[in-house]
Length: 101
Image (tube, rainbow, N blue to C red):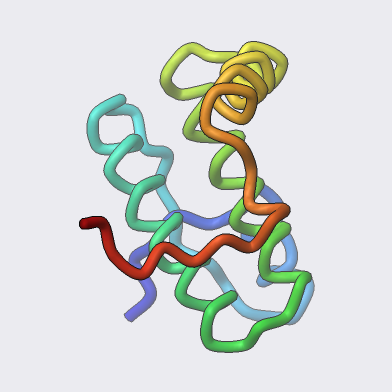
């Protein structure tokens, strides 16, 4: 049993291997958003388990789909991300906070 959101070309890839995919298009926006969130968890888990950079491609693709589904462009997101990076910093200095007194 598969039952998960997949990339657009996956049904054709399955067909080319001689198998038959059974698919439907998710029309409900709330259901699509939830499926994207589930997919994000799946892809992050795959990256954490494998440590392979290629898995981050899937994470980023899901993030882009989430942005689009919520009405935000990648460029708008980058502006938001940059503002937050300026205010809070990035992870470049590798600071590990042990506790606050």
